[in-house]
Every structure is written in structure tokens, then in C-alpha cells.
Image 1 (cartoon, one colour):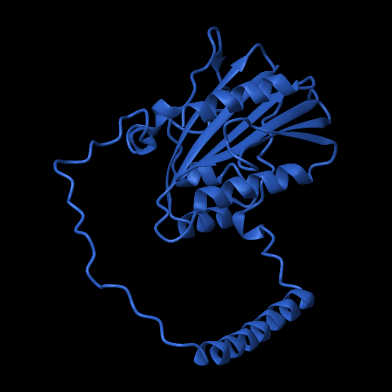
Image 2 (cartoon, helix red, strand yellow):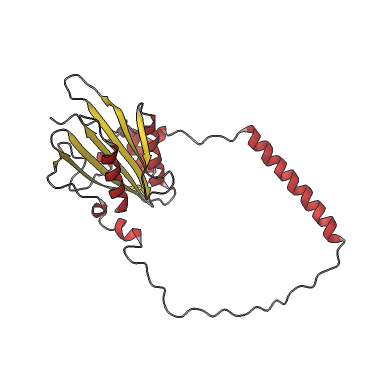
Length: 254
């Protein structure tokens, strides 16, 4: 039988740790730098005042001709918005051949509306409010299972980003809580830039009486206004190769 679907370990965005405050030493260095600038300006003014005036160059400059014609637009392969502003479901990787539908799908027809997506977190009411504040636009989702215990869930969450870089923040939030799990290994996902995409394998399973042990692996990354989330579950340990393959292929479609 398939193991119980564990609620995502990410806490609501409001639970993210705030930025680290500046230290006293940093402020002292900044103050010393300002004093140094003031002293340097005064010294430079005294030296310059004693020099003979220098003739200014001519104000006339050569005229630069304006290019003729229109700039060629980016191709669909170069413009990522062509892929993410259309049917976002097309940016999801497809289930493998022979895969079955998940017993616990997280949406309908490839979409997860705001309440459905928020329900995947602990504290869904608070998460709902956070998503509204962060200008949630839509979420495309796909899930499948192979055999009786191995299952995969992938979300592409898109934000309007009129006032903040919400996709980045939600990816960081997922990585923060994933890294806090004990007995966890992690790796950078190639093709995502330094520190952007990270995959995790949790080596200690979730055990509940009457159920098979539940192992989890997850990955997070972001591209422009889209946050990528991948969750893999199985009754036996999940190899690094499985979560890395899924993460690399999904990032490649963004």
C-alpha cells in the first residue's frame, strides 16, 4: 500500500526568520569610512585650489546615427515568459511511462487553486493569507505513483511580483525548513545558479503505527516569477539520483 501522504514540512512564509541585524562593528566601520571621506574631500579641495585652471574640452560631440529598423524579438527558446505566461502546465515534466495517478492528487486538471495549494502546508489559514499578500497568481501541479509506495508531487507556483520577488522567497522558505530536518543531505541542482536550486534527501523516515515507514526527498528552485517544488515519497530510502534527475529535468523546462 502507498504510505500516508505527509504534509509538506515547510511552515508558513510568515515563520521565515527575519534578516540578520547589522553588528555594532559594521556600524563603526561605516562611520569611520564617512569621516575618512570628509577628510579626503577637504584635503583634495585645498590641493586643487592651488593649481592653475585647466582648459575645458569643447562641448561639441560627434553625432551618433540612429539605427534603422526594428529590434528582432527574442525567440520562444530565449524568452522564458513565452513558456510561463501561457499554459504553465506545459512547463511541468511528464510522468514516466507506466506511472499511475496519485491516490492523493493536489489539484484538478493540472491546476491547484489558492485554497488547495495552501492546504498543503501546516497552518493553511495563515499560509493562505501569506499567499494573498505575496501576490499568488496560480499553481500548476502534477503527481504520480510507481508501484504501491513510490510517489512524486511537483508544483510550479507563479506570483505576480508587482511589489516583491515572491518566487525567490518561497523557494528560500522551502529550503530553510528542508535543511532543518535532522539526518538530511543536500546538493546544488545544476543549471540553477549559485545557491538557487537545492535538492534534499531525508534519511530518517516518518514512522506511525500501522503504516509503512515514509521516506522523503524534496527540491526547490526558482526562475523569474515561478517557484519550483518537488516532493518524493517512498517506503524505502530514496537515492540521491532520483531527486536530482527530477529536479534537473524540471528546471530544464523552465
